[in-house]
Length: 336
Image (tube, rainbow, N blue to C red):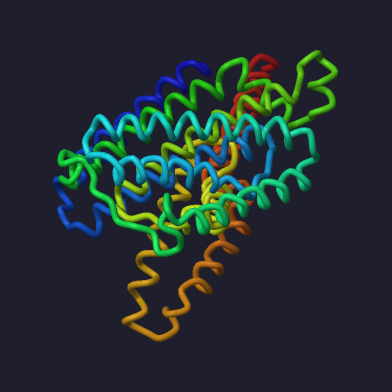
């Protein structure tokens, strides 16, 4: 029965992907297409964060360093060399390699610590990357940043849109397979009870480093796509706000679900966009962050496990209740 549900959910996700492919031909406006691309990009970034928080129980405040590594790797490659598909691919490969190396080193050095110490140390490391980007002006342009050219093929908005969508879909199914694998089950066991998992013979640090590397690589891909959509980069890609956005997206959408962070990204990006636009209607909307905070509080109150997690819990309880009722009815008929 479980296998049938998985196949059904896969078809639902594929149908949603097909609908999203059609969307840019229906909504041709530049702003709406850009908004949806940002949802795809931050959906990827939030999924990478969900691997840490949702599946392994690791809280990181420095996840933005991998996002920034991906962004700067591609941006520098596009700026220093010809903006062609070849150099774009080289830039993404460089981003993935650097992110993997950094996440491996950071994991080895910090994942032995308890969660709150790890969170503070990753925040400090992200701060180091931010300072380095501000001081290394010859490479990064400092706080002023720099504009960049992108390959001619991606200057067409629909092509860039489809690239972001295809990347999101491939990474979603890849991470879904990863989390459903035996390795993913071990990660969830670590999240639930680290001591018991270690007593079963699993080396917890090894598994944490593996998920840290995978998460860092995925985050770097999100950073690469982000910079292609903006065609401009500055040190804000290393800002702590980027990590906090991913944290909010994951919590609002549903921790440990993968699809939840994508939904959370959509809600936050749409809320940001439309609440900012409402500033022209009334002065109170100029303080849209207050309204956004209120929405976040309401979501946490009414959906404590996130939107996807709470819906899953609701339907699970409903299904269990129905099964119990059916069992009682069967017992009564047999007794009669």
